[in-house]
Amino acid sequence: MLILGIESSCDETGVALYAVKANANTTSNATKGLLAHRLHSQIAMHAAYGGVVPELASRDHIRRLIPLIEEVLQEGKRSLSDLDAIAVTEGPGLGGALMVGNSVAAGLGFALDKPVIGIHHLEGHLLSPLLDAPDLPFPFIALLVSGGHTQLMAVEGVGRYRLLGETVDDAAGEAFDKTASLLGLPYPGGPSLANLADQGDPNAYKLPRPMLHSGDLDFSFSGLKTAVLTLKSRLNAPLQPLLPEEPRQASAFPVSESSPASTTPALISAPISAAISANIAASFQAAIVDVLVAKSLAALKQNGMHRLVVSGGVGANKSLREKLTLEAARQGAEVFYPPLALCTDNGAMIAFAAALRIQANPSILRSPRKDFSIRPRWNLETV
Image (tube, rainbow, N blue to C red; front, side, top):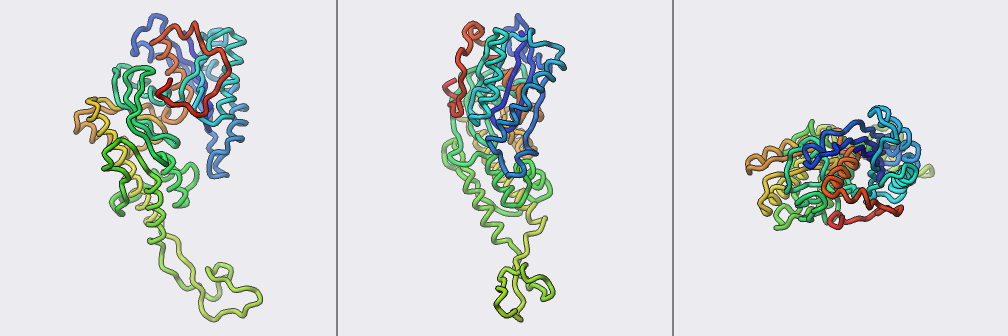
């Protein structure tokens, strides 16, 4: 069986070709069929605006999707007529972006008379570590950590997900991006801040660990961002005299053209040094990692499980991977991650999730999605 996977929920256009053995009845057999995948990121386009512009994202998906489909078919040495099913991200995500992927999937399904299977975006992320760990058995705990989501899920099987805790405000990735902006780092902020943190001391500043001892498995990261803003303001260099020969407009207290020039040197606030910025980044990252690790280990303990799956863009963070793996081992648990190249949104995870759904319930091929639908908001527990 050959599945074409399409992902277009936000700012990445992903397409993949996944082959499933016809007689596969185990996860292990089903995970050996990634024939090709392509991913186009819109980072460069959105960087000028400091974040994703939905209309531009949708237009770019239109330009990229068909060429990417042609590329994966060529790499996989297959043709459209070889397809047995089309899997597409049905939601959640940006409405316009989802419309592009779903319109192409629906058109292909109609033209080829092939079933179209709508996949939950987070289900794709949640199951993606199985691409590298095909023998991983259910049940396990999943930490979904990205720019838009921070959730802990109990995974009993394909399509059987139970929410244990989630962020009450900013997601971890969102906090990374906003804090990076405070430090003047380029978009996308998360990777930029992580790179800067590698040059700093994580113990330089004591930042709060929000909800670390809340007694539940929920998260909160907006206050941590505010703590960084307060720290940065406190660490700003003291006011320095502005030399008389320097331009007056650089002054923090400019005089008007009609006012007589002051003989008192003006004052300007010097920015924090690169070393201080690195220490702030490292301290911030350490706070995020501490909370994610503590809550994940608590979820394992409370549910009597010893396997943790981590997925989403923040799952690529080196500091998180190192500490989570170490602390889980001390608790007698094992952690599984997707390949680094598949931590961000991608078509491979969508095709793979469809393969596992078909494997768990082959009847969905006989009763595929018949309407053209998207779900910008979609609770994972209801899939």
